[in-house]
Image 1 (cartoon, protein in one colour):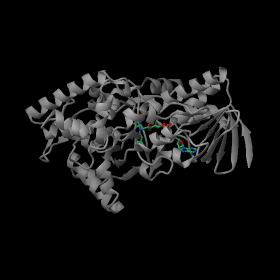
Image 2 (cartoon, rainbow, N blue to C red; image 1 turned 90 degrees about the vertical axis):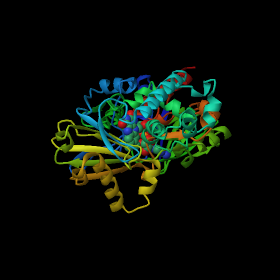
Image 3 (cartoon, helix red, strand yellow; image 1 turned 90 degrees about the horizontal axis):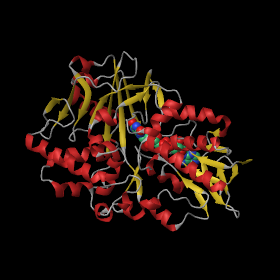
Image 4 (tube, rainbow, N blue to C red; image 1 turned 135 degrees about the horizontal axis):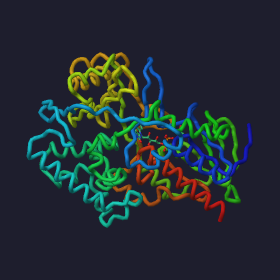
Length: 454
Ligand code: FDA
């Protein structure tokens, strides 16, 4: 049993928590970061599996992600572009494969016209949405009552156009079925990346990677904090004291007294902490209306990037395939070739109902539909399964159920006395991404500095 005292305790050593801790330290406050896992980084995790370096969690950086880009530069890390030479492939509703270049999938001309019209319509709506305050849109209530799927049905009868537009938000971003979240939530997702067009453009949204892996961001941020980061310390209790200070207790009996605490992890994990007194009733309601998406990130490493020989970029899409998108994910300077595929929401549910062998077979079969039979025989195969991670419980991040964003969104980031909240799941710009985590870490730190100096 150990008793420590700091100005601020930060729960969680992900990008948000470590950014906040560094900002607070720069402002002259003492900090302690308590991390439940035996590593830092949370949803950022670069590891070597069977001799292959894999980005098990987040990896891509896009040009609008200024907070992340600044941090990468500040830490002296190098970036490189995702491989994108050659043609992409698309598998349509009829199962036919077509090679194409550009952003719009090769569909029938009337479907293409519908896709272009819907993108224009969504871009116009997204331009009206402040990603930090989507609930302030004049039609927020109305847009939050209708599922994105139903909203798309109101706009067009063209099923393939709807399936493709839904894919950019549902399978590819929120990793929930398009009937499970609202049109307002979809607009927030697009607004957080600058526009709906940005989500359609893989070369924009999946632009760069960090040489050596994105987990270096939290690793280097933690290095700056030295012994002020403690691993293997799951926080289980947060008590507000009479003088509005806090006492934070971990499973290992460590007790830390502080003037403020930042919960820097996904909101779905708040119920695992006992709050004394309990959080206000509306916060408790709010937390029950937000849930994680569900996606399997699949890594397949081959002797060489064989698809490039066929003039393919490795980029593939289909709303009708188990792996709805795939990319060339070859590491910087690596002779071997790596494909990364994604299996989302209902497809992920289905594949976790079958054995691991059958899951692997069905996923590789799907990749072979895009890239040919060689895709079925990788040297290394690995599934990132964040649904099984006790300290995350899904991926990529959390979103509201129907009606939740307009009803509770405005209260998501509001502190409760000395208890502050920061994570990518509650970001505006950079929502669901590392960029958003860093932004939220900065916001929480600034609020505490102001509170302490008042
Ligand atoms: P994060 O979850 O990372 O950190 C929270 C920390 O708190 C964790 O370390 C956890 O262990 C700890 N914790 C939880 N409960 C605790 C407790 N009670 N006590 C102590 N510690 C506790 N983003 C992007 O920008 N580009 C991308 O390409 C991708 N791709 C991607 C793929 C996959 C598979 C995933 C899972 C995620 C992505 N993302 C992404 C999303 C991105 O990784 C994510 O949004 C941020 O890393 C989240 O950072 P946070 O700090 O907010 O939370």
